[in-house]
Image (cartoon, rainbow, N blue to C red):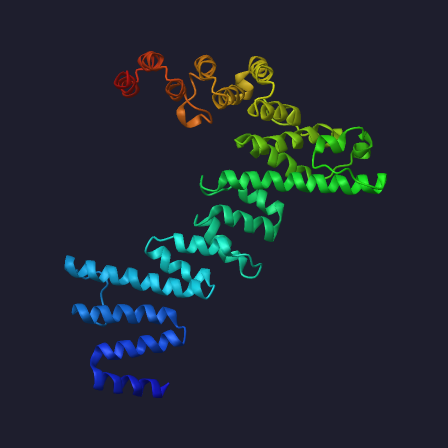
Length: 376
């Protein structure tokens, strides 16, 4: 170490401060002491700008033109050091530098390529909880810790970004687990499992599969994933979710989940809803949930059954029907209590601006009355 100090002295004496800073930068770079390299880069820039080389008070004012140059040097140094850590495969050490300058893309790209089980937890924290690459973070949770933790984590998803893809992955994973589990049992009993990935085909003609309250995936996993599946939008994954709900209806009585209306008959009611989202038996589904709304006492169930029906109608783009139900059943529910589109939003989605003006006028809503008038 004493040799290093001597070499710095020699360099400073022969080449001046600039040469000394360059010598120190090369030394720490060769040693991969990247945090110190960051400090050297800033020290050099402070010298160039005539700023104090030893900072005593970070809050001391700096002239605007100097601040711009210094901030650029800070960004360049952070980008350089963060990039060096990424080149070494050290995502957790790189992230603070890129976070400091608001650049997530390089870290997201590095996380996308990450496939190691070693050191996965801090990468997951950055990818998922800090929203750098939520879908990849969810993939890592599922592959490293299993579906139980993935389900728990999904319920706390930190952003819209990556959520839909993660939900599809979750449904596919549980469906595949169910298929493989059923096939193993069928193969033991029939010597060979059918060549299919369809749960209904595996169940067809095999009522014995459910004798003695037999089950093939954790039922708490099943109910959680089915609940989440109501947010699905693509037809293919909705089909898998329908198969999960169909499987649930075959389970023994001790596994028949009871839930709050309108999903009190859990597997049957979710199956009806999911099939409607696929465009199957739509009128029957609307009638099914409409009857549940009529049968429910709002004093006991609250507005949830009506909100579910309005949400379904909105998803099906049957906006006028949704408006009618909303006006009839949800007029006293505040916007913060709604888990479905409000009547104002439904009127806008329906492009029924005349009705929007009428609703707004009845409610004393000057803002949306003016908005509708501006559109007309």
